[in-house]
Length: 240
Image (tube, rainbow, N blue to C red; front, top):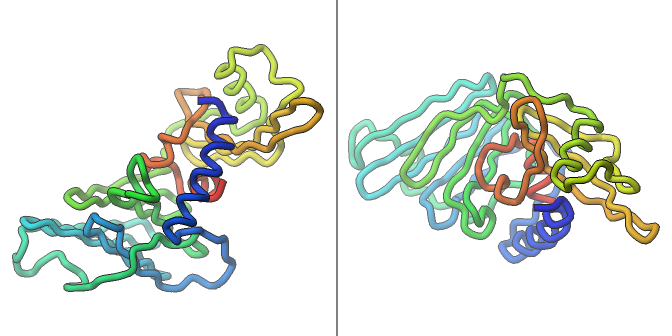
């Protein structure tokens, strides 16, 4: 997928999906406060508080729940439906079907699935700084870390430009270019590609994914896999 396709078509598609579902995120600098929400059609409910994030889910046969602390410690519970003590944190709780705005505190939750805004299958909740957290769907629960500790490609314009040149099979992007201000978190990077044509430039948000010691061009499919660190996800998949 070309960066123009991801940055332009995804941009308008996501905005329309957000508006249609009443989910349009807005960056806020307000003090963090508790947020409670239900992931529509999954049975997953979550609560984001300044000191923790908790989620629960249940099927006809099993219940699961998880809580993460600011230090990245994840406590999980999984057991048969109706067992005592059970794993349900808020029995009978029903919250609005919406997704939280970009976080201003320690934690973030991002949706999972191919149609992650209109038909999510679950969430990944994590500590923004470390990536430690958990992944929860209607039936499954697992610990995750969205910020890989392994060596990553250099976070430079040259390295990101080389990834685009490989994707386009070009020796040079000129007169187009990658602008300053790229961000890299773990195995993902975010860059602004200035696509020049007829003397004008389109500003395209591009997501890159590490493959060994080099970057490769990402695409819209990466947005719903639950692997993109929250800082990159909210600046690319959610708002661009």
